Length: 483
Image (tube, rainbow, N blue to C red; front, side, top):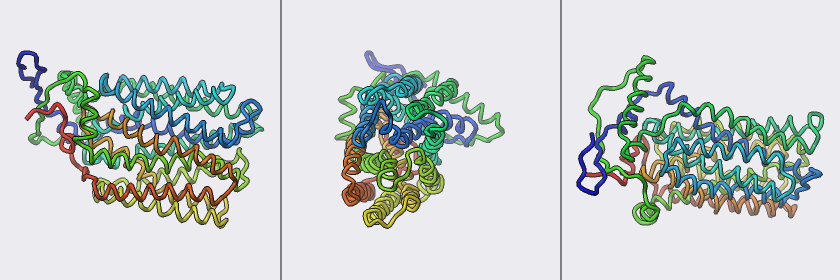
């Protein structure tokens, strides 16, 4: 229902669209949404893994001849692109809509990762990695907001964690692809790493086709005054659910009253993040920065640790990533349900704390020379079983605790700040630590990552909110809400 506005005012809309989306039983529609959008994390996993597994090949390349520090710089360039891409495309996502942007960002990614295969020196490689990161960073904002707004509240936590955990399916694909393509018997040394980067471009083409049928977010449409389109999309989803033989509860539905708007000024975005929801912002920043440093610092230099400290040939590094990826995939799948039942605050605090403690212990064992390449991998597998769920919960927290009108921008801001603090600095720092050849220097870096995770756990326990099984509008009232 739309109320006639006073002169110069936007119309007031009264709708039950959010309640209708949250009451839906899980159907094929939700599975397809998760598949078509969640595969973004597979792309990111593929990219990050390729950057790690081809590190040895980049150093050995007669064209590039990278040093360990160059590998770290390339990782930082990718993350810097992701930071700026998230901010720019996140801003556009809230203004232009979710659907337009997840096509634009995918196109940027596709072209840039294909171009990486044709790099001729350090600077061209860094430029193409920067642009690849920009596409992926933009995807984070557009996709996270869309999934949050389409998935029923009762399973939002588990779904979001599993989707983010699919990053490691991409990691496994990247590892396997690198094992084959970096084998000198398959391709010449300076061609294998180039072919590896084309894997992502080919996968992106498939994803592009999968997304063609996806609808715009009805929640985004309703806040922009396009209520007829939103109603039609929701009715179509309900029809598909019923056609599967599933029952939709016929109960009274809560309605929201909104004053439509075309955009949200950046000044208002800043006011919401800094003043109105400052405590939530502090929690989001702590979680994002800690997990970004923890993951990116360790994983971007994963291959260097194996090659430099354990003497593993560069072509064999991919085999060590497979068990590591398995732990990361299983963590969110097994632990994710507890984020919806036991609750966000205890589970986030638990997974962050356990991740930090295990990394500190493993780092000490590494410094003492107590580990082999195999036992080091098993330790990392155990650490990231918990860390994968922890990292995914950071995106969940930021996405669900801020108002609908700036959800994508909030995701972008905290992803950008967290990654800028923890991700861009991390790979460069760890690359330099590995360059020293000192196990104890690297142990110092591991201790820093562990401390950040434990600190973030404390922030969540003290200031986090219980968002489990609550509607997005209940967790954070839309800015356009009218009493």
